[in-house]
Length: 208
Image 1: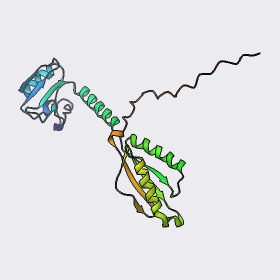
Image 2: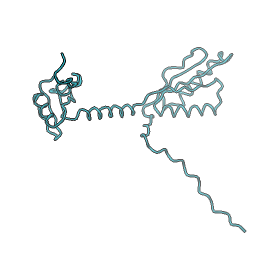
Image 3: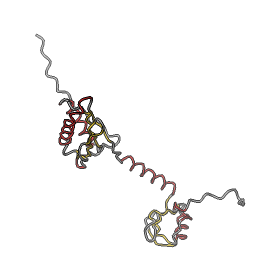
Image 4: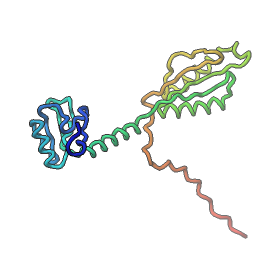
C-alpha cells in the first residue's frame, strides 16, 4: 500500500529507545532545566517535542528507565566521540621479540636488556629467544641459563610466564610487565622532552 503523502518518515528502530520506539509505559524524564519527574512515556515525549527535542532512554535498566529530552543527533555524536576517545586510550599489548645467541657478548646483552625494560614499561610483553646453530644445539643449557639471567635482571619491571621452553632449535621465555612499572603514555600532542643543554662555553681566550 502506497501512503497518501510521499513516504512516511523513517522511525528509529526499537533497539534505539528513542521517541515512539520507547516501550516502557513510564520513565523518569530529565529535562534541560535539570528537572526530573516520573511520568507516562507519552507525556514525557510530548513535552520533549514541545521543546524541539527527542526523548532518549539513557538508562534502560533503571526502574523506571531514565530518559532525557535531548537532541538525538548531538547525543549520538557525543556518544561516538566518547567511544573514540576511550579506544584511543586503550593500550594494545604487543609481544616484542629479542633474539640472542648462546655466546651473546655483554655489550649486546645490555643493549637488549635496555630495550626489554623500555618495552615492559610501555606495557608490552617480551619474548626472549636463544637460537642455536649447528652443534650449538648440544649446549642448550647455555640458552636456559642466559634466559633465566635475563628474566632475573628484569625483576621489578617484568615477571616470567613459566620456565624457558625448547622448541626446535631455540629456547624462549615470555616476560609480562609488572603493573607498578608500567608508565602512563604521554598525552597526544605533548611536547617531547628537551635534550639537556650543552655545557656553557668558557671565556674566549685573549689574544696577545
